[in-house]
Image 1 (cartoon, helix red, strand yellow):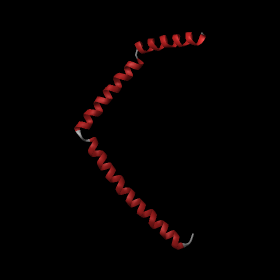
Image 2 (spheres, one colour):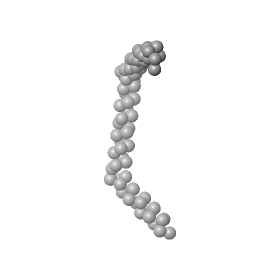
Image 3 (cartoon, helix red, strand yellow):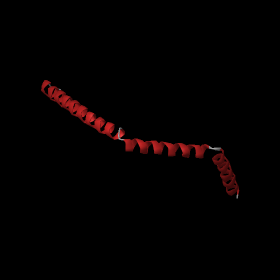
Image 4 (cartoon, helix red, strand yellow):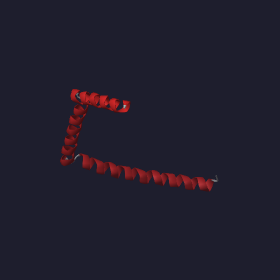
Length: 80
């Protein structure tokens, strides 16, 4: 590359870095505003609790018993 094109490339890279930094900062500001909203925090907490209940239901002894029953039915059907 010539010196002239290298300088142009460096200028483009510097401008991209400046613009990218400003966009990242603006995005982080918006994200912080959303995350600090009490309604969003309450919704996130509710979703977490729902997920926790679903996980406990899916990994509990009743779910394991149901899975074993379903597996035996599938095995019986495959044998026929």
